[in-house]
Length: 206
Image (cartoon, rainbow, N blue to C red; front, side, top):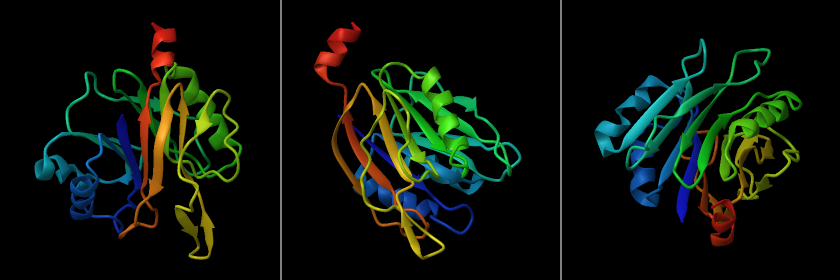
């Protein structure tokens, strides 16, 4: 069983390193995915050890970040995505051995972000997770993947409209638990999933 947390930190004015450290100590994730990560968060491994990698969005002060207690066999792959009207997007993909995880912060365009998901799906192995800030309303429309993330709102647009835009899609895995956590200083609530590769699926892949 693998426990994964995803959290949009809210760049500059959002969640601090202290709050991330508290989250890791409290929840003990196997993988922590972060969006809107700035260079301030680079202090994280000095505080709690482990492996950390940050992938800035082109031309922006923030980007994607991943933390794990132990270093993966290979550094995350950065996949360029279709550009939005405001700036370019990338996806951060890390292999955990039995499956791969794609950390995403997709565009706001409701056609574009679904196109970005399809590009990501094409490069992922049979057993895979796509998790993060989707900026997406409604169904994801990604064939072969199942939405297993918590169903509660994770963000309030304009402090008025509650939205579930932080998502977790899986292919070839089983979810054994999903929930949201307090948002602290961010404008997003972290989401938590517990995943496992079914033994039958592993035998079929062998």
